[in-house]
Image (cartoon, rainbow, N blue to C red; front, top):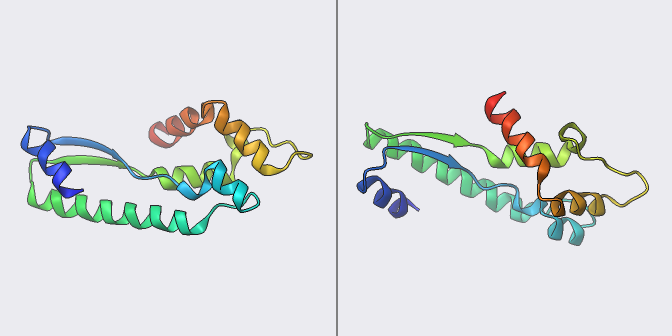
Length: 123
């Protein structure tokens, strides 16, 4: 991971916008396998990756005084979407199992993720 960012930096990039990994265990395939619950082992790996990424970026910024970055916590944003879908315009139909509702959201092209991004980034 560090080698990748170092190569980009060596080619002149000094400002970065970096998004962490989302809650992979909450994708529809995992939720369906777990009877609509997120797969915690996959989410734990996502969280560990994000912690390592943020730690690396902080250390790297101390070394490279001319480098700056913005970090977007995709995992937290994704978790909020999973646990509060109606606040992003996703209708949960009470007579339909949750994984079908979630797959419906996923298939419709993540239309609510744009709203989530705008709310999270721009307030």
